[in-house]
Length: 571
Image 1 (cartoon, one colour):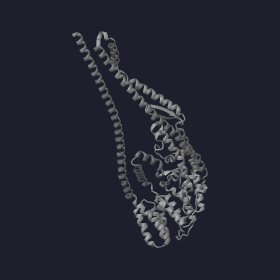
Image 2 (cartoon, rainbow, N blue to C red; image 1 turned 120 degrees about the horizontal axis):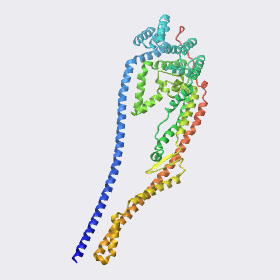
Image 3 (cartoon, rainbow, N blue to C red; image 1 turned 60 degrees about the horizontal axis):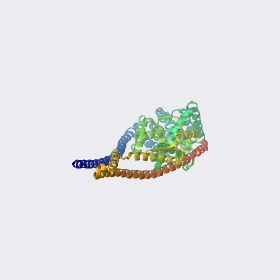
Image 4 (cartoon, rainbow, N blue to C red; image 1 turned 180 degrees about the vertical axis):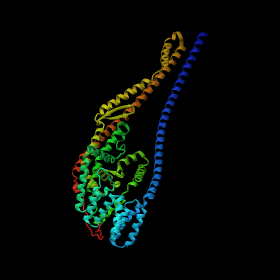
């Protein structure tokens, strides 16, 4: 009897230990799960923190870049003022001298004194002796005029020739104007034109010159183009040149607000956004070109006013020695305008500021005038003429860009939702993708259900409990109670398993519904993206048709001749 009591006590102790172990296992399991959840949360927080730090670092770098650029910009402008500020005084004096001679309210000795002082201030600047020559002509001092003119031509033959071509046109001296213009044109090399050539294009397009001179200039422009065409790589050079110019007009808009699901769940999104922005260039170009051709030109000016406008352009055109600082000024301003994004500013500068090069070909001059009028110093009239003369190359470059854009459009659009991935062409395979997503979630749920198992200890306890119950004759009531306890412990584990399975199934049912809705929305946006791209791409034909309608000979204007009182008989 005592032996049976000892055995009963031992079994009771064992049962208690097993129960305690089971509780400890569940407690550890909960703690491990809590730790796992905490690690997951921590990883997410660390990822967010990393993104925030990276964003802060980028903002700091951009802010520093802006601050440094602003400081450097002030320094560059101070250098320009110190080194070339006196040029501005001479430039202002040039037009003042002509206008003062018109109304005859400034004494000749005052004009002489001012021009001589300017000559002393700028020992290398071409405009100073040119003004001395002009002042000498006004008082009929031929000897001084010729000496001053020779010095001006020595300092800058081309600018001086163009300056006096405009001045003699202002005085309505047709023969002298034609001679000066011929002298200027003979000095030009269409492969290496200087920046002031835009003034010639501007004056021709605006109708400043007499019809005979204007037609001679247009004929010379066409001759330059024909000469450039003799180069073997001319066609390809023009395509590259205009592709660069058109590329500079592509906007890099963020389209994610229009396609929130595609931008979030498609790895192909960057390509989709890039190609859509490239396709939007078509409508942008059409509006830009229409604006150039259809915008009314200013009311016809009197001859004096028209010539004065071109003289301002000529004398305001920066000389070669100023260009390095002017280029530095333009780049620093772009960095500031781009919020400190230096690389983007440098790319934009490279594409947009070729007008600040010291020399360029005639076709590059036309490109600058048409696409970057502010930097080139071109008016709407010059843009029209440049567009008309370049329309063939623009059309070819545009065709190249269109082909490139269309080739980059992905035939398949990838979709990733959590761990599932699929692809679609135009959103038409919704049923197939939904079935694939459902199969993926079903497999994932099965794996998760399989991971929730009853431990080996529970199975042993259940079997041992059953054996003890059916061994009543050997173990008595105590054995039966121990067996029932073991069975209850195993059954409880089984119940917990069933509950976990139910929770997993409910979770996957919710995931299935949510992810199916995400997939449907992504496919709907795929359809809308294809439609949007198609709409933008249709504008290609409109751009081509519009370019074909532009005729070079119809893109010049005339101004009204006026009465000129200055006597330039000796010019």
